[in-house]
Length: 140
Image 1 (cartoon, rainbow, N blue to C red):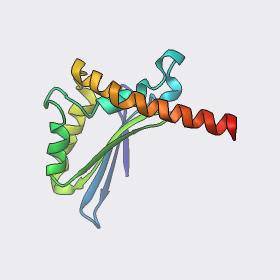
Image 2 (spheres, one colour; image 1 turned 90 degrees about the horizontal axis):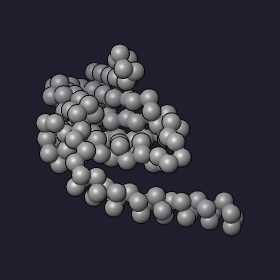
Image 3 (tube, one colour; image 1 turned 90 degrees about the vertical axis):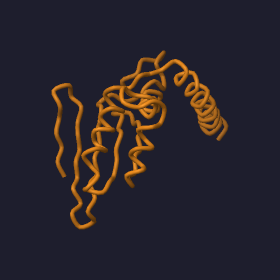
Image 4 (tube, rainbow, N blue to C red; image 1 turned 60 degrees about the vertical axis):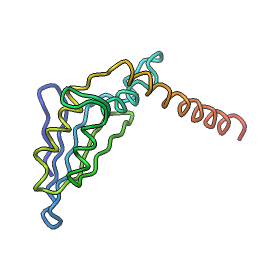
């Protein structure tokens, strides 16, 4: 496994699994939910979701479609410490997939219509989680 850190602090993780002919690749931004101010609660998770929308090279989820057409898996997650976008692909397909991931991560467009749609998706999830958490903590 190789880990490189870019000049801006973003970490790149690359793992070549020769036995299976696959490569795992991830981009990690060292900003997670613990870096949010109270009025920003949930913004890192929201940004992670928006990375899977339009970017400088593709509109809507075309990047995802192009990655999956090449037989690769692509996903993202957010923790308290970071935002990550990662893939697992055949070694023969990894170069164009890495380019697509870089476009997703470094050149998102944050289009208003996509922001509004994502708000409608994420707000109910947040409210349900908050209510379940509150009920579990305060009512036993």
